[in-house]
Structure formats: C-alpha cells, structure tokens
Amino acid sequence: MRQRHRAWLSVLVLAGVLLGTGCAPSRWVAQAMLRAPNRAPDFLRPQARVTLRWPEGLVERFPSGTLNLGSPSVPIHWVLVEPANYGMRLKTIRRQDHRRFVDDFEMKVSLPADGLPAPDRALGTAFLVHGYGVDLESLFPCALYLAEAGWRCVLVDLRGHGLSGGRRVYLGTVETNDLRELRQILEDQGRVNGPYVAVGHSLGAAISLRWQTVDPAIRATVGFGSVAELRPGIERVRKEYASWMPAGLVRRAAAHIPGILGVSPESLDTTSAIEGRLVRAYLVASDVDRVTPPEDSAQLWRQVGPGSGFLIIGGISHESLPYALSQHGAPVRRWLAELAAEMAIAVPR
Image 1 (cartoon, one colour):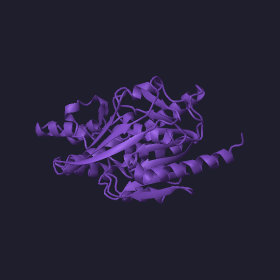
Image 2 (tube, one colour):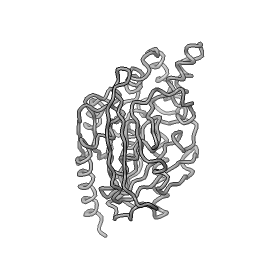
Image 3 (spheres, rainbow, N blue to C red):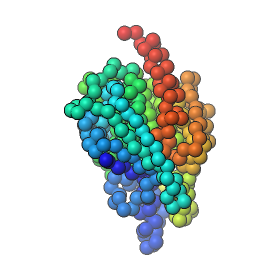
Image 4 (spheres, rainbow, N blue to C red):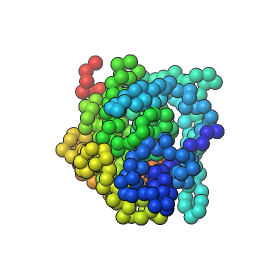
C-alpha cells in the first residue's frame, strides 16, 4: 500500500527553528514562506492530519508527462485520467491522535490485470489543482471519482510542488499562466478537449478561480475550501498549525510578500482577482473548517456569476474536505453534468 501525507505551510516550521536562533527577520520569513515546498526537508513538515492509501504503483499506471512552462520556465508534471469505470471505493476511518482527529482514507479500485479500462466518451476535461505543500496525488481520489462520471481529468503538480520544478511559489500570480500553457499544449497534442473546468482545493481552489479570469477556455471552477484573502488566511494557518510562532512576526512577513513577488497587495486576494470578472463556480465549504471557514467561500459567492452554486457541509476538516464524497460528491457531479449539457448545446457540432 502507498501512503500519502498532507502538510501545510511547512516553511513556518523552518522559520520557527531559525527564529529560535535569532536568524529570522520578517523579510526572511516571507522569503521562506514563498520557498518551494518540495525543497523543504520532510522532517520539518507538520504532522499529517490526513492519510491516503491505495495500491502501490497505481498512479504510475496512468499516462503522465512533464512540460517546461511559464516564466520563469520550469518543468511542470501532469497525470492524465481518462473517463472510465475504475470501481473506485473510498473507505474512511477517523481516529484520535494527541487530542486531534486524524482521517485515514483507503482507496480501492478494480482494474484489469494489465493496463487500464477502456475509456468512455468524455463530457469534457477537468484540471485538478492541489493545495499548498502537497502534490497532485492529494486529489487522485477526486480524479477517479470525476472520471467515473464521464470527465477526463488532468492532475497537475504546481511549480515548487511534487515532481515539478521551481524555487518559489507565486500564490497564483504565475501559476495560472502555467496552467493556461499546459491546457493549450495538451489540447494541441490531442490529449484533451473542452469544455474545460478546474477543480481545486484550498490555495488550489483560489488559483483555479483566478485561472478563469486569464483563460476563457476554462468555463467553470469547483472550489473546495477556497482562500478569499491572503493575510487573514496566513494568520489562520499560523493559529492552526504553528500557534507557537509570534503573530506579529508572521503578520510583518505577510506584508513583505507582495514586494518580493513584485505585485500589489490586493492582487494576492482571490476576491480582488475575480472582482468584476465573469466567473462561474461551485463552492464547497465545511462548517468546522478553521483554515478556510465558510465565511471565505461566502465572500467569493457574493462575487461569482450566474449559474454558480454554494454548498456548506458538516463536520469535515479542511484537510479532509475534498474526500467528503458522501456529502458533496453527488451535487458536484450533477452541477458539472448540467454545465457539460449546457456547453454541448451552446457549441454546435
């Protein structure tokens, strides 16, 4: 079995270590917060609160590739999941560890002994965008779930994550261009076709919403626990994962981020990025999410366009939100199916 761990803002741990030695001015902490998570040592990452398990080598059975994209150009890794019946089953076990609940998810599939099941006709293509500090495999169960509903799925390692390159993360200001180039190249290669949607979790949800504003081919977004505004989001992450770090230090570090990235402070807020833009989205939030509470999705809900949806589910942590298929799976599939039918009517064949 393969075990996947979820981590969040691991650079805060590194910053805290250096703070204890007197080596962490706020600007340095800001630079550490933007450092590529896949370059941080595993021992510095917070303890995982969600565990994903599936048969060893399962992801490697699917088509994949790497393309040099964006500016600065870096290799971006992707995995393609064709629409088919994978016999996917997701079992959930909740246990308590050090006064916190930890969710274990075990995924089982039914595949041919050699190869993959024959693909079905696709309703369209969904690009799945993971959150900060993890990789494309964190949304692999979601990809299989949507593929069984008729969607071709493309899983992407954002720059600085997983098997992709890059020394820095850009909080969506550069990643959206990476994704736009990736979609265009895969389309030119005949691997994908529209209608296109984006499905993201946490920071990945915010990036997916931004992607709609720079790529007209992306017709809609499903966002699980999207971040609305950067600074309040960073403070909630500090309280949830690194409460021992001084709030003032993290607040001052957050103020340095726009200057380091060469952008305006408001451009890093999802609310500002989508304001006045025709964005269509289905937003999913949890009533107990302490990282991206329902108020964040409600802020975005007030800005999205016609045909959008908003669902609040109960009792699910931020880390487990994408896997609560029993609560949001059917509504999300139905909303996407209606979108695909609408697009098929709008585009004569």
